[in-house]
Length: 253
Image (cartoon, rainbow, N blue to C red; front, side):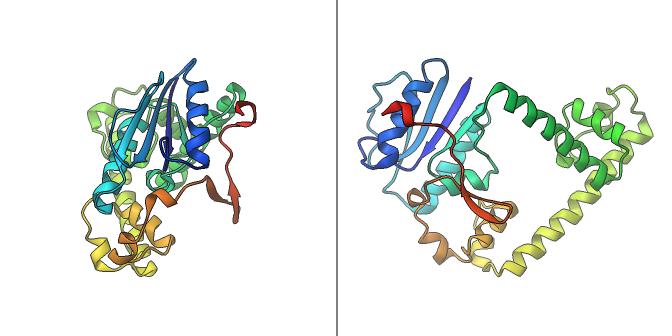
C-alpha cells in the first residue's frame, strides 16, 4: 500500500509532530511504501529510514513554497492509497484530499457509499435514470467533468449506450459545467475576494472559494499565511469543528 504523510515539521525540527510522525512512518513502512512531505530549514539528506522524506525549503518566498507544496502533494497523492494529513493542512485541503485510514470493512463500506454518491450526482445533476448512472460509475466515470471531457467514441464502448445517448450525456455534462462555473464565480464575488488574489496564477476557482471561506481575501492575507502553522486535523462535520484522528499513536510511545 502507498501511504503519503504531510507534516509541517519533521526532525531535526522539534515539537509534537516532529516527534510522533517519524514513529508512525517507521511503523507503517514495515509493510507499506511510505513517503513524508514536510517543510524543512534545509534540504540536506537527513533520511536514515526505510521511507522517503521529501523536504521543501521553509525559508523561501511563501508563494513559491505554497505552490511547490501543492505540486508535490498532487504528484505523490495521486499514487497514494492513503493520505495522513498531520500538517500542511490547507495545501492538502485545497486539493480535496481526505484522511483515509480505515479497516477493510470500513473501506468496503466507504466504496459502497462513494459509488452511491457518484451515481446520485449523475442522476440529480444530469437528470439520468439510476441504472444509467450506475453504469457510468461502474465504467470508471467518477465526476461530471469526466463525462464532459470524454468523447462519443469512448462512451460508445460501453454496452447499452448508443450514439444519441453518448452525445446527449456529453452535452448535458458541458451545460452543467458551465452553470457550475458561473455559480462558483458568483460565490467568489459574494465572498469578497480581491482581484489581486483572484488573478494570482496557479489558484483554481475551487481553491479561491476555500481561501475565501477561510477569510483569506487578498494578497496581503495570503502573504501572511504561514502554511507550517496550519497543522492538525480539524474539519467541519455537521456544523461542528471536530478533530479527525487518523492513526492511534498510543502504542508507539
